[in-house]
Picture 1 (tube, one colour):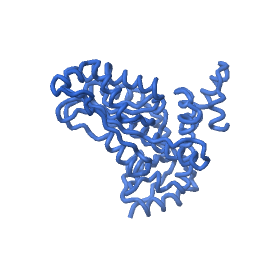
Picture 2 (cartoon, helix red, strand yellow; picture 1 turned 60 degrees about the vertical axis):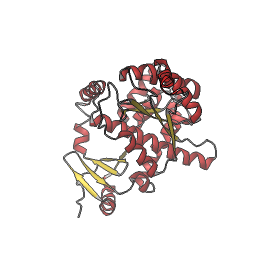
Picture 3 (tube, rainbow, N blue to C red; picture 1 turned 30 degrees about the horizontal axis):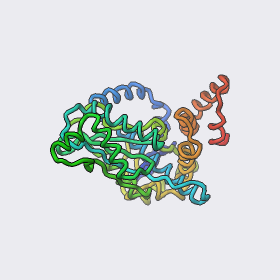
Picture 4 (tube, rainbow, N blue to C red; picture 1 turned 135 degrees about the vertical axis):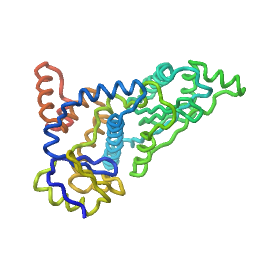
Length: 335
């Protein structure tokens, strides 16, 4: 039989697992080495190495984005006031043999392409992952929250990859124009589609190393994190019994207790108090992104309200003293 954790302080629901952190670790670990660890992770990323911690952070950003869209769509569908948001996975490939470095492909094709999508289709929130194909060419998986006609998208991507001559070389070899360089898949937001999307995007690269960054989440999404559910001591027994009963297995170390399930825990526990508390946070993140269109900084401050109340109060006080507007922040969290 699984043993109940002796200390409950707070927890995260991430995919098929619930992680419960000990009070001691959370207090000591605010985290002394986080700054240095982030610097090391960035250095690794630019060398084409992806740390486990970096992948974990991106995974949490993506799960949070998905959960926010799911909860927001439900809420606004009931109200009939907002069009449903869906995530679109696009695969972007080169149409002829790669003759430029990975970094040059990213800086001269991918980045201008993303800028075009932002300026013409309001694509602000996105995630991309770079991988090598079997033929050695770099290709990209891009997730956006706007649907763009697949014929148009292919034309735009081909225009940008031809900045380095990849369409011209394709034509010289085949005599054809407008090669099939893109694929599109739309996700409906259910548990299975989210699980597939996350596994597909963060799977291990077993081919050649990609130069420079392998993945990137857009600025606003970097502030959308997995919600932390604070637990009262009186809730410990009820929750422990429930997790013991439903978990497939668990892992315990000095820092946390992790329960693993055969399903997406966020969806399964949606009617439990831990799911309800998470839902409130994800609704606020949805409103930040899609209803009020808050700035990067405003979203950061709103997220502080849920993750670090002391720092939140300090930042808001600083903003008030400097005369900067905080109406968007105050209205959203209903202070």
